[in-house]
Amino acid sequence: MTFGAWSMGHFGPLAFPGGLARARQHVWLWEAGRTVPEGHRGFIRIRMSYVFGTGQDARVLPENYQPLAEMMFLSRVVRALLNMSSVLCYFNPNGEVLARWRGIPGYLGRMRKTTENSAAFMDEHSPFQSQRAIRAHG
Image 1 (tube, helix red, strand yellow):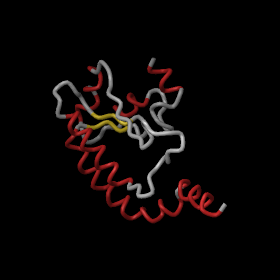
Image 2 (cartoon, one colour):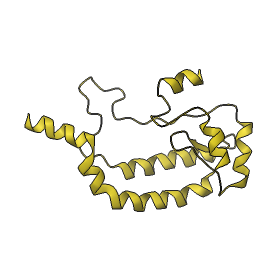
Image 3 (cartoon, helix red, strand yellow):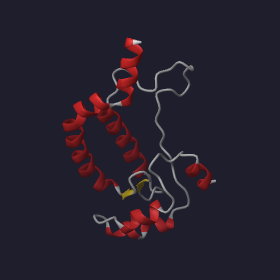
Image 4 (cartoon, rainbow, N blue to C red):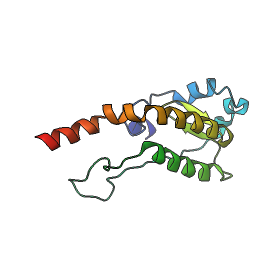
């Protein structure tokens, strides 16, 4: 079942089999992270979308899309889950990131700086901007 989900791209475009094992090898800031995932029995997938429950003509992203605000919201969801005693850790299969909550705020702070510095670039080079321009002009 997991292989089928991966092969259909349900874990994201950059996920590849063996990602958890690689993440365990590279979890430098959390020593226990090399062994903690061995005890996992399943996973929780957090999926966000602007089109769930909407019609066929729904926009993939809203006009006022704000990636930083979206990531901050997602981090609150992750933190709530990590506060549950049965949740062992956070794993992002696209970046092969494995963490406990204490490591995430530092990462989010670095991401915020990077995102603020590159927001104009992202807006300018977004494929969604190109689609908007095409719709507006033709």
